[in-house]
Image (cartoon, rainbow, N blue to C red; front, side, top):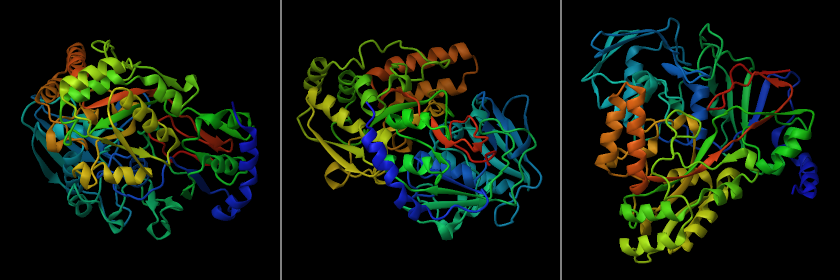
Length: 528
C-alpha cells in the first residue's frame, strides 16, 4: 500500500531541492533529468554499465544503429558494399562528419574505434575472430576483410547497447582497452558536447548541443535516423532519493526521471502534469553473475546448484512489486522474441533448496563464505542481494553480503583478485532486452576465459556453439543452436537469469518527443 505520509514528507522536501538545482532558466531550453545512476566513469567501452552507455549516446555516434523495429540502419556510414563471396565489406562515411573539436572524422578513427570496442565486447570479439584485417582506402572509406563469411557484421556494428561500438578519435581509441580514457579525451562525434568544466560527480553532468554535428536526413527511429537536438542544454542531476525525485518533478524543478520507483508510479500517474512513458516495451532481465575464477564457482556443479536453488518470483516481488511490471520467464533469450524457449529449463529456477543442498554436497562445497556484492543506491537493484542471500543460505551456502554504491560495484567487479584480497564471488545486475536477444550478443554467454566479461567463464562447448550461431544464416538452424546451447548452459551456467521487468520513464507533460529505444536518448526532445 502506498504511504501518503512519505509523499507529504517528500513534497515538503522540495524546498531544499530548489537550492540544489538552482533557479529554472527564463526560457525552457535546459532539460533537467535524473538518471538511474551518477556518472563517475566516462568510458562506455571500459564498462558495460548502462549509465556509461547513456553517456556514450550523448557524446559519440555509431557507424550503424538499430531502429524501433530492431532493423540495423546506416548511421555515420553513407553506403556500404559486400563482395559476392562475402569476404570483403567496404564502408564509406557520410560527408561533413567532424569531431566536437572541429577535426574531420576519418576512416582511421573508425578502424581504431572498432578494434578497441571489439577487444572488450562479446559480440565484437566474436566478429573479429572472423576478420582478417581492417584497411584504410581513403579518408572516408575503409575495408574489412573476412577470413570466412560472417552473418552478424551489421548486427555487431549496429549493436544497440553495452558495449556500443561508439566511434572516437584515433588518439582516444588507441587507449589500451583495459584503461579508462581521460576526461580530456572525451571528444565526441555525436549530437551533444560534454561540458567537462561543469562535471561534478555526485551533483550533475552537463551537455550542450553540438553545433558541429550533422544529423541524418531520415526521421528518428529508435537509435537510428536523424539525431536532431532541440534543446540547448541537458543536465543530469544526481538525486539518489526517490522521494526527493518525485517532489522535484511534481514541482517542475526537474523534467524527467529515467527510473522512477515502481512503488511511486501510482502517485506520479495521478498528477496531471506528469506522463508515464514506456520507452522500452521488451523490458529488462535481472541477472546474477558468477565469478568463475574464485572458488567455489570455478566448479560448474556448484554453479548448477545455484540454478536449482533460485526462484525468480521472490526477486521480482522484492524489487518491482507490482506484477504488471514484471514477468516470470525461464527462457534465457527474452520471452516474446524469436529465440525464446523454455526447453531444458524444467529442473531449474524452481527454488528447490533441498535438491540444491544435495548437489552442493556432491560438488564438495566446504562451507567457505562467498562474497555477494550489493548495490545500495539503485532502487531496482538494491533488494536483489538480500533475496539472493536468503535463497543461497537455504541451499546451504554461507554468504557474506558486502554493500556499496553501484559505481563502486562496477569498479570492483572487473577485479580478478582473490576474495580475501578484495575480490568477489557473485554480483547482481540487469540487462536491457536488446542486449541479450541471441547467444553472441548476450555478453554473459561469452565463455572465452580471459577474453570474457567480468566473471571470466571458460567453456569450450559454449564457445563452439556461439561460433556456430554466428556463422549460420538460416534462422531455423540458428534457433536450434540457441536451444541446444540453452540446454547445455542450464547445467553449466555462466550466470542465472532472474526474470523480466519493465521500467517506464516519468516526464512532465511539457516534454515531448522521447523516442522508444533500448537506451534513453535526448535528441528529438522538445520542452515547451
